[in-house]
Length: 137
View 1 (cartoon, one colour):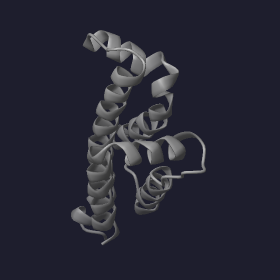
View 2: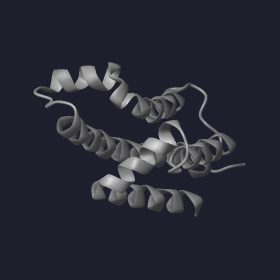
View 3: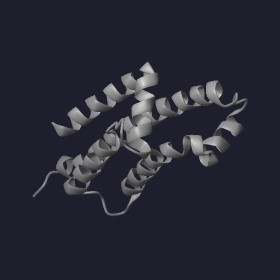
């Protein structure tokens, strides 16, 4: 019979994954805001920024990461707890999503660009790789 800590392990792994992804997402939002301020126009309020994040094509690539975090939140709130296979699949999907691709499209290409221009994104990526390493052990 599995111990209660074994039953909670997939949930804890999903929580750790979620928290790491949220930290990275925050840094990516800050980076994109700075780039938008520099290249397009100055963002003058939090409400303007939220509107841009939700609707402007500049920020569209980040929605894939946002939606993935929401999916994890929904699994954490579900009545039926996630099992080890589901946690492993989520981690695998997150690793695939966070694969920068210079010649790629969508998230991977934009993520590559963010890594090239912003050292804070590089540091956040490194922290996320540490999260993945801890989740693998």
